Amino acid sequence: MPREVSTIDRLARQMCKALSATPEMDRSTLEQTIIRETGSDLATLSTAWRRKRAPRDGDLERAFILAASNGWISERDGMVVLTEQGQAMARRSRVGRIHQRSSFL
Picture (cartoon, rainbow, N blue to C red):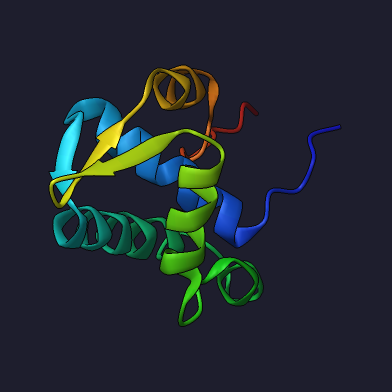
């Protein structure tokens, strides 16, 4: 059974996913990317799930701190950089876009 991932952990993993496409971003661009992706993900969920998974004020900052403390990202000269550990985590993580499952009748 898969474990429940907290909103902050999910956001930290989404940061790594976003940085895997562009290994270096300034922090404001990264935050805008995460907000845009989170908004499109939440649009496909039911209201109950949306309330449960929606990020709250300060969650992006906590996610940034978590990703940095886990060694997934680092900050150099105002740019956020994905580390080797972050690349490995982004490859194995399944957070991000929610895929619609088709049902077979």
